[in-house]
Image 1 (cartoon, rainbow, N blue to C red):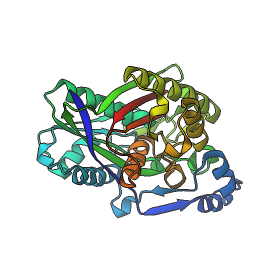
Image 2 (image 1 turned 30 degrees about the vertical axis):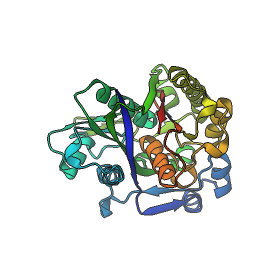
Image 3 (image 1 turned 180 degrees about the vertical axis):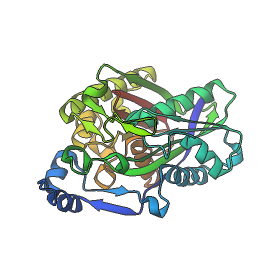
Image 4 (image 1 turned 90 degrees about the horizontal axis):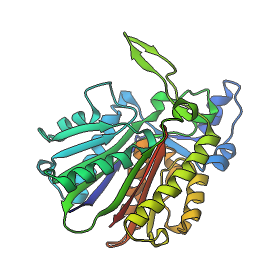
Length: 326
């Protein structure tokens, strides 16, 4: 038994924030940056920011992406018996985003829960759904990555605020005897914890304790990301008895173009097979991979029977890969 991707969907907030807008905003606080400085270091040119006054929240984006994935898959909501949402920025502590999505879709009674593995979250959620569909009794699932990262950015910290964006992506999976997800693996090394990438805030007796903003050691993240992504890709390829060079569509976590191209080179995957949405989306954390996958699928970049490699890496440190026969 396998789980197969039947459809993809995505959603982005209306507001687009360019590098030029960021440069002007930071300049007002005496912080120097430029479009060129951001582009040459990250490959990012713009990103989308949610407007809560317009009703754009993590759950509203997740619902929109899920509906588009259901439509693409030609699957009725009544068929869904599992909803998993990967997010670091839920609307509230609880109930979960997944339960809010369930209510909005009218999928009452099915299993619904959130997964928190930051930028690796979608790979973790996909792996969990795959295992549950293979084992049963679940037969159809929606897996969503959704984030409103703009809520947790220090707009005076040039090293982080220019990197992230908001959005959501979703896939519909169904149990099948035909090959689909061939191999998926998750990894973590908690020893890095707060040293490399963290947001330490917590709610304590009605007061926010700790730092409510993302903090990052960019050089360490770069090194750990490349090592983890290359190693995990090779492992899932070995498990599926294929070669990474045979991957027809490479969908890496869209955080930094230099990381993406370095990983592709080490895996022997030509750059023209690599999906790039980082320029327009920035790093959307758990939404990054499904957003990029939906863009590629709708552009006709992958054909039935071809191999698709998905990868995520983020705070924890956590990382993982999934290899799919489309």
